[in-house]
Image (cartoon, rainbow, N blue to C red; front, side, top):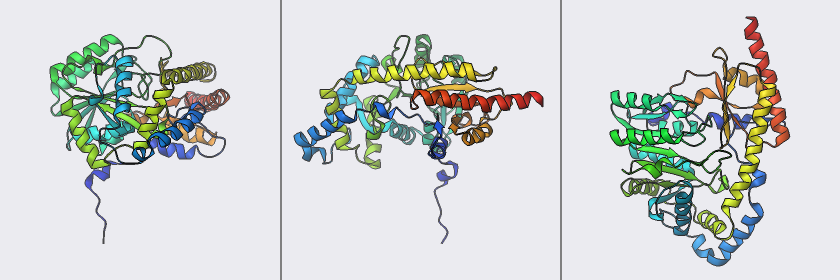
Amino acid sequence: MAIKFASRMDGLKGSEIREILKLTEKPGVISFAGGLPAPELFPVEEMKKVSTLVLEESGMEALQYTTTEGFPPLREHIADRMNSKSKTNITKDDILITNGSQQGLDFAGKVFLDEGDVVLCESPSYLGAINAFKSYCPKFIEVPTDNQGMIMEELEKILDKTENVKMIYVIPDFQNPTGRTWPLERRKKFIEVINKYEIPVIEDNPYGELRFEGESLPSLKSMDKKGLVIYLGSFSKVFCPGYRIGWTCASPQILSKFVFVKQGADLQASTISQREVSKFMDIYDLDKHVEKLKTVYKKRRDLMLNTMKEEFPEGLEYTHPEGGLFTWVQLPEYLDSREIMKECVENSVAYVPGGSFFPNGGKENCFRLNYSNMPDERIVEGVKRLGVVLKKYMKEEAKA
């Protein structure tokens, strides 16, 4: 009997980042591919104490089912942090706990998209979001960007002439993959535009607290007066990704739909994980932990960029992120980062080719580098290895 899969499976493929991470598992490979936090900064000893406390104080409840919306004290912690860090004015009732913010992306597709609907996103945009939305068979329109993020005039042109736009997906703070951040005036203009057209917005913000320099900026959600912005947050980058605790913050009308979808998907996020993350914030200072991350990641960013300046061939452009985990390298148009990647892996260094960050394809002369995961000496050595390969390719092309 021939197995027949749903037609939506035709357009799906494995995450390129995950496939590259498999290649980097061999000994000696220096990987700048994954968006991985530094494991040596995980609060292992603190979580040993937290885990014991949770089981001693509420073991039976921690091992039982909980509500779909999530553990109320954790949602209160999140609401307090969002109000403080993202300038919002929300309560725990505006929050749904999810299995990472990635689940929130999948739910957004399920809630808003029918086959053939249009999704607008930055060009380039986060590969994980593109893959999550592809399950629902939409059409993607990439909004042009510059060094300050999405260009509002281009967004308005697209909205003015495009029917059936169901949502806009953006990462205003330290964008994945480019590391760019939208300035305040662009955020204000964006809100004006979406209020005019009344299009739902997915504001993905896993990196916003990881600012190394410059002033913190208000989230789009904090400017939202019509309930159009759905904010996705996560503890993966500022705490521990293994807990898989993220959240969705939205207006009651929208959040109720996400709750229905969550019930159908997995009923709830892990009870014990929610309680342990909440307990950590009860007895320890998460802000202090984040400051430690920022100190280390800023040092690594600076080290990577300075080494790139010394070791990369002339003629390459790369971003200088004010925070987050990534920088974005732009090659001359005649170079293909996928082809170069093969030789880089042979030389035991890896990045993510940039083509996958463009949902409609066609742009291969760029790649993403992560600086948060590797220790200092491996950052220097890895960038040197990249530089050797890049110089070779640019020299060969110059001879042609």
